[in-house]
Length: 320
Image 1 (cartoon, rainbow, N blue to C red):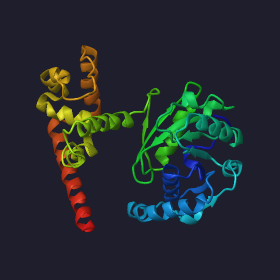
Image 2 (cartoon, rainbow, N blue to C red):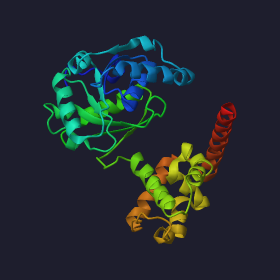
Image 3 (cartoon, rainbow, N blue to C red):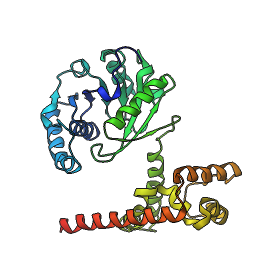
Image 4 (tube, rainbow, N blue to C red):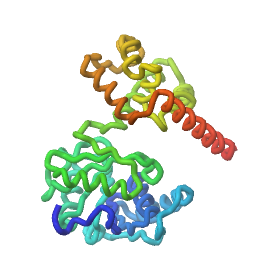
């Protein structure tokens, strides 16, 4: 960090490099949060597609609540990459998942962006360590991995590379929080990040079942939307299994059901349930519960599930 680095809360000018589905979603999100957004994409006539995406997202963003000063008129289209980042106070890159392209683009962004300004990549598959190799000032580059659509799904996973300095990760996490995102600041680089790894496990298993004629696409989707998906919005998979252990919580669940981890229910090889892993899971659930009892968690979960069910039902009725 240097004297040119703005505080996360003072940022008003954001540059979005790459304006496809993800980049355009970022543009819509930042506009809705009241930022002035400059966008650039090498694709010819990208502006029309980008403005259509923003217009399509705007009703949902309006329903969620626009920040003071939010306006689609705050979108500026740049004719060059250098122009896009010239006065940026934060940069979000969202180019296609091509490592050579990412390396070259991030190096060019880094060279053109004012000193001290944090540069974030929307990559969903590459680690920053392998992308920042050609950057002149790699210490300010981080991954800010969103979920599609970025204007609606709040999650963003933040992690640096081997040459990223800790201040940049802290700064990016704080900025994304100020910008209305739900942030997971990762402790280390993990291939595929956290949510994608979990999502990929379900996806891989779904493909196995379809390929083997064990379940249809409709059955698989219904198994999530009508089953565990209703529990996950509030508690997630770990605390959900914590409740499965009753008053004994995760400790009882693992002691009772631990052997079934080796049952042939999945094509993913289960890890060895060591004492260390068991203790880490139990302690992690205790931290996540944050003092709430099993009964309190059950009550919270049930209220959330009912609210989700009612909301989804209203949307379904409106679609008929």
